[in-house]
Length: 383
Length: 30
Image 1: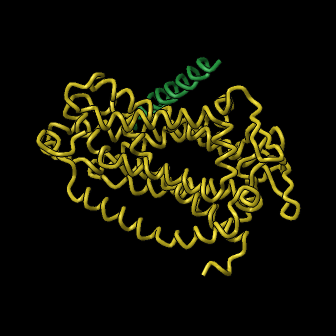
Image 2: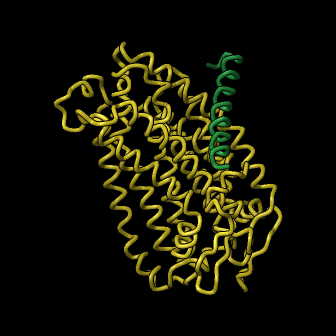
Image 3: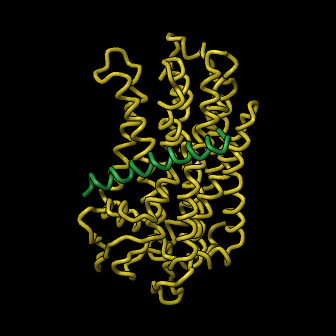
C-alpha cells in the first residue's frame, strides 16, 4: 500500500500525522487550563474536589498525547528532535519539569500524611497550567520566528545563545503565541468543567456562574495576543525552501502565500477561529454546556492549520536565523524512506487506538461528576 | 535576566486578564 508512495509523499504524510497529534494536544490542554483557573472558580474544598477530580479523569490523556507528539516527531523527524532537544535544552526541560510537577500533584495531593500539603500541590498544578503551556507556545512559535543555531558537518547542533532556548521568551511574537495558548487553554478548561460537572445541587451553583465568566474573560484576554501573532505571521517574512536545491531563503509574506496555496488550510484556520469564539459565547446561556465541543474542535482546526502552514509548501519548519541553511525542513530532517514506510504500516493501527480512547472517554463521562462521588472517600480513585 | 523575563511574562498575563475582566464588566457582558 505504501510501497507506491514517494519519499516526499511520505514526508508530507508524516508531517500531517504529527501536526494532527499536536492539534489534539492543544485541545487536551483544557486540563492545564482547568488547573490554572482552579483558585478562581473553586472557593471551598468541595468545589476544589469537583474540579480536580473532573480534570483528574483526563490528565493522563493530555500527558500521553504530549509524549506521543514528541515520540512521533522523534521517529519521523529525528534531526529536529536532536537539534531542538539538544540545543534549546532549557525551554524543553522546563516544560518537562512542569509536567513532572503535574504528575506528582495528581498522585499525592490526597495521600494522607504527605509532606507538602494540598495547597502546595495546587500551586504545582497552577505552574503546570500556566508556565508549562506558555513555554510550549513559545517553543512552537519558534517554528515561525526561528532560533539561533548552526549544524556542523556531522549534524551536531551548535546553539548560539547562552540561554539555550529560553531566549525565545524574549521575542514578543513568541510571547504572544505563548499567552494566547495559556488563555485558550483556560477558556477550554472552563468550558470542559461546565460540561463535565453535575451542577444540579444548589451547593455548587455559584461555581457554575464563575466558570461561565472565566470562559468569557479568558477568551477576551486571548484575542489581542492572537491578533498580534496572526498579523505578524501573515505580514512578515517567512523561511522558504527551494525545492530543487534545498536552499533556505527569506520570502516576504511566505506564510500568507502558504495559505493561498493551500485553501483547505485557510478554511480550517477560519472555521477553527470562529468555532473557538462560539464556545464561550454559547456558554453565556444558563442552560448551555456544549461550548467545549465548539471551542475544542475549533482549537484542533486552528492548531492543525498553523502546524501545516509551518511545514508544508516548501517551508522550513524549524528555521535557524543564525545560519539559514542549517534550517530544518521536512525533507532534510526526516527518517529514511524505509523507516517512514514501515512507520506508515504501523500507523494503520491509529484508528483502533483512537477508537479505544473515545470508548474510554464515553465510559468516563457517562454520568456527570457529582458532589456525592467526590465526597465518597472509600472510592478507589480520588484526586 | 531570566528572572526579569519571567516577571515580565507574569505581569503581561495578569494585566491582560484583569484588562479583559474590566472591559467585559464595563460593557455589561460579565
